[in-house]
Image 1 (tube, rainbow, N blue to C red):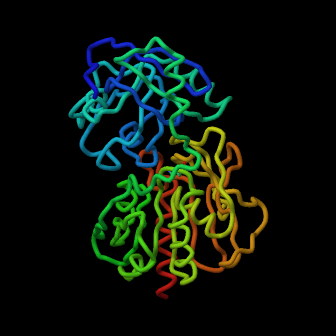
Image 2: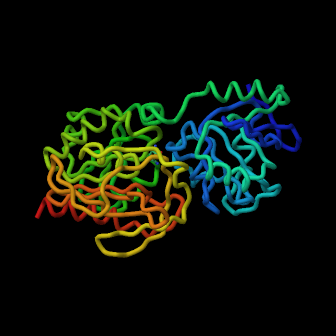
Image 3: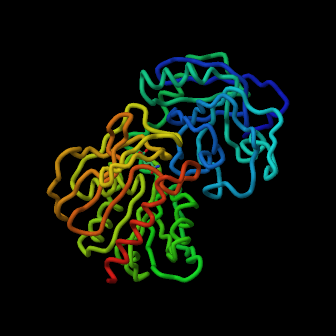
Length: 379
Ligand SMILES: NC(=O)CC[C@H](N)C(=O)O
């Protein structure tokens, strides 16, 4: 049960699993919530962040101090609802202003029952997460917020992100089609593991008819649409649990159908090739992360949202059951693997978000690369 906080100063408390406590005021819905505390460095694009299904079960801390300035509109959502488990801001806008805005962010959080906290020193909280790593957190308001020991016990009983199998909780239950814009050139089967709305849109803009399939889609479901290419989306949870999608991807690789993966899809390609995945200390989340495309040498500024990464050798070509593979992209902040490509068949993936919602459009060329692979098959 949640109630309104707007215009009030309901006390709220944020409790990390290592016992650190931050006090503030309720923001959005009043109640309690649990998740993995992560920080996003995006200065803008909060609506896209909140509605990205990959944030399911995560409590997002915004490093930008002023959030909500442009309100909420009906155009920028990346899915039908807010997925973050909780929201932490420093200084929410009191009077949002934007020509597209139809409501305030705190109204929207409250309407969707999303518990948040404001008035928190998000710089201190971010530094704590950076030093200690992402960890479980609870936000509490409205009830007893004084007994920190009892709240800490609740946080320590909440589920971990490591080992969480979440795609089926966020993905579509029924297949649907996003039609090509203009002349239809290709058909793609897109396995929805938590897809963002902009991803099929970026394909549709290139003449692709996108058949979005549930996370549980089988190899037969994928080939029933007679695809020119197969796509595996972003999504929440630990890639080590995604055995079903890994086996579907292996079947796609067997058939040498052109393949593209984004984020969770990159981790699944890593696993399909025989690499491991591991949890990063605090992940990459934001819209200003430098990545180098090692195939061209170009550096691009990119949107990220990942807490896990692929463990593949950076400087050697690997022999895999599907031929030679290499790391195509790398994050220049920390050398984390940001992309994989096969050298003997048309398959590649990136760990970041070329659909750019929100974020810079530097990486849009990857959708063209996917089109080229499908063109190559036809030539
Ligand atoms: N955006 C994504 O697809 C994230 C993938 C995975 N859940 C991770 O945290 O690394």
